[in-house]
Length: 409
Ligand SMILES: Cc1ncc(COP(=O)(O)O)c(C=O)c1O
Image 1 (cartoon, rainbow, N blue to C red):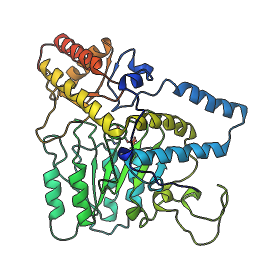
Image 2 (tube, rainbow, N blue to C red; image 1 turned 180 degrees about the vertical axis):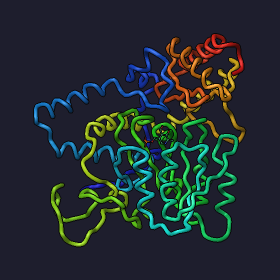
Image 3 (cartoon, helix red, strand yellow; image 1 turned 135 degrees about the horizontal axis):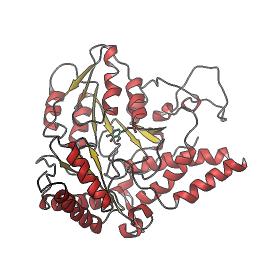
Image 4 (cartoon, helix red, strand yellow; image 1 turned 90 degrees about the vertical axis):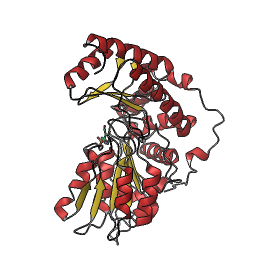
């Protein structure tokens, strides 16, 4: 099958990039309210309805074309690759982030005493259980304490520099789901590379929003899904695995699409010795979510037309202004001197989950959509947001804080 190499996305000239205001108008959900909840799920394009209707109509009429379906998947694979600076054959198609992480965990040759390093205080449970599940095989999961709500980069670097057996895996989310700090992927990936440690990134919150470039940073594996920053559906994701790692990995689960045989048809079987497909393609299993592939193809075109560097700068700028505005309005914005800001801003109600929920209700009544995680009120932005949204969110928060009893949470 023809898998092409794609140049890293940020090296491309983008002469006809739309403006962010033009793009905002392609998301109806961004126009009738202030939508600041991409960290739960992103808005999808208004054009998705027609695309999905055409897809379903083909099935209703029984005229679906499987070749076209596969072409949709390969097109999506190529665009995932371009988005992060990978080659297409370093991308496996998955259904979500945790499947990607579990594929990696299952494909390494573990020995008793091998170590995985993470910081559970900043990770989503799906980037903890995949590794804790290895404890039954004698793997040690070292849980570093967080540094003021952020991944403890200095402690992790120190841990990696210790003499003796190097950790087998270090993992971190590119942007934490709460409070939304960004990890120093550059420093961590380089230190892991030096020690021969596989550096695994949970990109659930960063893909499509933050500029990720595996050509510039030696990230070993990266798992993502399509319903948040990629502005598409649940039930589809991708797993990047750097060729040098993937070629040494043995997939725990195997199906036809992961096997390299001469025959071309999906139902062909070759009784000869099993040869895995190149790099991450060996991790593909059975049939794909073709509808999700069609929709993400379109949203990826849009993201690529802006370029992730520009999206990152734009969204980070908006969220920085949101954080400043909320702080001025009397909210306890979670900040940390050494943590890098992202598209996520959290307000800390210091254990008072009821008040956080009350303020969230007040926001909703004013057409501002955010969410609550524990006693943190979380606002998360994407390229369809603008300065008017920021101003409206600050004003609504000021009012909702006043409604629920005074200023400082
Ligand atoms: C950092 C992070 N990892 C993982 C997930 C979810 O993983 P999955 O795609 O497997 O449901 C989320 C969802 O919110 C997340 O924020």
